Image (cartoon, rainbow, N blue to C red; front, side, top):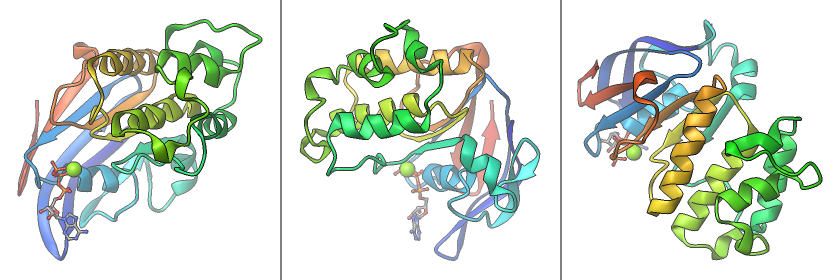
Length: 222
Ligand SMILES: Nc1ncnc2c1ncn2[C@@H]1O[C@H](COP(=O)(O)OP(=O)(O)OP(=O)(O)O)[C@@H](O)[C@H]1O
Ligand SMILES: [Mg+2]
């Protein structure tokens, strides 16, 4: 479980938002909304332990993530605006690396396909993401949406329980959105947690999704 109580966010010496309470249990999603500059990315980076909170603390399974980062880092996958993939490697090389990080027996079942036992898991997931024709292309040569697909495919292959995603749907076309919505549902169904900032609603299962609205100086949960 990811939790925070009375969290306050500061940036550039200014308080942006305070009083954020949240709890996200296994199998649930939290979608964070708000206007440009309301603090969504800042909150996500604080939740990821990349920035210190101005007030309060973030806990993963009850432990403060900045004091006890080991298990948290092991369990966390973060996708920010920069995608976190290497431009100098091909799509396949990037994903092989992710696949090694997340290697386990279940990897071939990711995202709704059983996978042939003889095919490596990254091939199966790439096919679902529409990346197979691009597998030998260097990521630096891809379009924004294609790069995003690589970043999200990496996330799936790494198989971490906690996904923190900053505007994951940015630049995705309708087909990729459907694919990614399906992946989110499967991740949650397997007990994974999704926390995402977004300007447009993601299609996570509604009974297992909460929404956090941020405004400068306040936040409330639906
Ligand atoms: N590195 C920084 N130094 C100082 N202030 C910053 C920095 N990064 C962001 N800010 C400020 O913090 C506030 C919140 O920014 P943040 O990026 O969290 O907003 P956001 O809700 O993610 O916006 P968007 O919808 O545009 O992505 C903004 O007023 C911004 O100017
Ligand atoms: Mg942002």
